[in-house]
Length: 383
Ligand SMILES: Cc1cc2nc3c(=O)[nH]c(=O)nc-3n(C[C@H](O)[C@H](O)[C@H](O)COP(=O)(O)OP(=O)(O)OC[C@H]3O[C@@H](n4cnc5c(N)ncnc54)[C@H](O)[C@@H]3O)c2cc1C
Image 1 (spheres, rainbow, N blue to C red):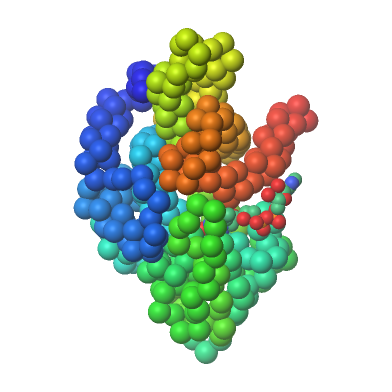
Image 2: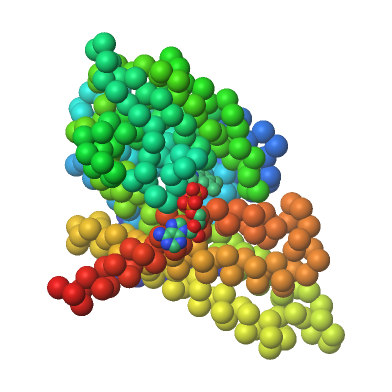
C-alpha cells in the first residue's frame, strides 16, 4: 500500500514518524482474527495500547491540546490491522473527551492519566431507547437531593458497556426544556443503582450494553463542567472524534482495497488474471478514487482544527459522511472480487463487510451529517 499521502501538507514530520512507529507496533502486536471473548480481548488491547504509549494521544498534551491528525492517523492504521484495536483506542478518547474538554483539574487528575496508560476503560453514554439521533429528547433524569445527585433512566448501545471503569453519562437536569436542560456526569462503574449487565449482540461483536439507572446516587463532584451545558459538551466531544470515525472507515477501506488487489492479481481468469479484466480494473479505479477522496476530506478536516484552530463541524461531517459511505462501497466491491470466498466467515473482507456497517449509524448517522452540511451551506447563502 502506498503511503504517499503522508507527504501531503496537512502533516508534519512528527506525523510521518508516528505512522511509521505505529505500523511496526501493529505488525508486532496485533492480529485481525475474530475474537471469541471480546471483553477480555478489549481489556488486553487497552492495556497493550496503553503500554505502547498510543493512548496518550487520546488525552490533551502538556499544552492542553489534542491533535486530531494524530488521532486520525492512529485510527486509520489500527483499523487497517484490527477493528477491535481501533475500537479499544477510539473509546478511550470518546469516553474521556468531555473530561479533557470540560473537566475540573481534580476530575482530569483522577481520570486522564489512567485513560492514557490503559489503567481505566472509558465509555460515553448518550443514547437512550427513545433518544438516538434526537439527543435533545434525552429522558434520563438527574435530581439534586440530600447532598448528591440521583439519576433514573436507561442508556442503550453503550460501547464498552459492562467492561468500562467509568461512564461519562448525559442526563436531564432541567435548567431549560430540550437541549438546554442536559448535564454531563462522571459515573464510576460501582455507582450504587447502576446495572450494566444487559449486553447487546451486534454483527461486528464488541462490548456493548444497556445501562439501567435506578435511584443511582452520585456525589456532587460527579457533575462535569457547568450544569445545563451537557448538549453542547456532547456535541463538542463529537466534533473532535467525528473526523476520526471517518479515519477508521478509511483504514477498513484501505485494507479491503489491498486484499482485493492482491486477490485480483493472483486469481486466474481465462488466459490471464482477474486483474487483467477491464471490469475489474474499473472497480479498482473506483475503489482508489473513494479511498483518496476520503483521505483528503479527513485530513483536511483534522488540519483545519489543529492548525487553523477553526471549528470544523461542516468539514468533519463531510469527512465522516463520505468516508463511511464510500468505505461500505469499497468493501462491497472487494467482497465481489473475492467471489464465494468473500462471504466465507473469517476471510478479512467478510469481517470488514460486517465491521463497516455501524460506522454509518453511530456518532451521527449519514443523514444527520447531511443535515449539518446542508445547514452550514444554506447559512452561507442566507447571511
Ligand atoms: C455499534 C454501535 C455502537 C454505539 N456506541 C455508542 C456509544 O458508545 N455511546 C452512545 O451514546 N451511543 C452509541 N451508539 C448509538 C448510536 O449513536 C445511535 O444508534 C445513533 O445515534 C442513531 O440513533 P438510533 O439508533 O436511536 O436511531 P434513530 O435516531 O431512530 O435513527 C434511525 C435512522 O433514522 C435516520 N435519521 C435519523 N435522524 C435523521 C434526520 N435528522 N434526518 C433524516 N434521517 C434521519 C437515519 O437513517 C438513522 O439511522 C452506538 C450504536 C451502535 C450501532
